[in-house]
Amino acid sequence: MPSRLRKFLLAATTGLLAVSASVYGLTRADAATYPNPGVVTGSTFAHDPTIVKKPGGGYILAYTAPGIGLTTSADRTNFVAAGQAFPNGTPWADAYTGGDTNLWAPDISYRGGKYLMYYSASTFGSSKSAIFLAGSTTGAAGTWSNYGKIVESTTSSGFNAIDPNLTVTPSGEWWLSFGSFWSGIKMIKLNPSTGKRADTTIHHLAERFVNSKSIEAPHIYYRNGYYYLFVAFDLCCKGASSTYRTMVGRSASITGPYKDRAGTLMTAGGGTEILASHDAVYGPGHPAVFADGDQDVLAYHYYTAAGDARLGVNLLSWSSSGWPTAF
Image (tube, rainbow, N blue to C red; front, side, top):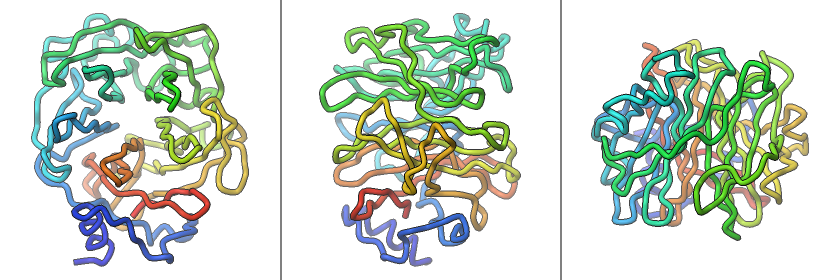
């Protein structure tokens, strides 16, 4: 058994987050040392995954699929197919999908006694997009109610309303980050009582100016006084030819400015790489981070050599200066 896998299994079962000092300080030249995904079994297809831990134990995973795909797990290792959030279709999204039943990049969390899910509707390469909100008391297939549209973009908006992520600050403020390509990653404030938009302000968090301005899939995670903005750089959805990689920056304020480990602003193209293609793992990206006991868990999708999209799960360790490393 590879030593990296032994370390992952030890941490997963005991909560010990020890990791060799040699893991720290990775650069793109060190990509061969990136960890392979931890062991997951069963229904492991995933694209744009998000995971929530259930209050009573166990996990729900949602991913891009017709009607939004669902899987469940009792132990974060074995996953079981659990149907679709919307098995009867989502006609309210058809204007953005062209009638396609695929809904993109769900973001699932548990708030106020129910599961909430923000998700996006669009077509590939288009900025005519919208983000919607749904809720369920159980999270099970077919139990999700449509709460309506949260934000939309048009071909003249200059941004793209896809890839939503809800972040709740320690003081109880709700914020929704989203975006891709175009002018990058945006954020709006939400009303906690409704989960909908609180005002008309749009905050600018990150942008790139190379490789077709390819940045997307934001996820903001709060830890020890910093908000960490995880994103995906480069190109998804090309099977084993995908160049997706997972990047991070941080800020003391949720609205920014976010900087990478070298101090470069993420609005100026900055980002510190923590995971990229290596071995038979292609295009690891669309990151989602959640706390599970004393562990910080990184979920993402990657492609196999055959081009299949699979769930990746690793743990995060943190340097003495507060920067994450996947292991």
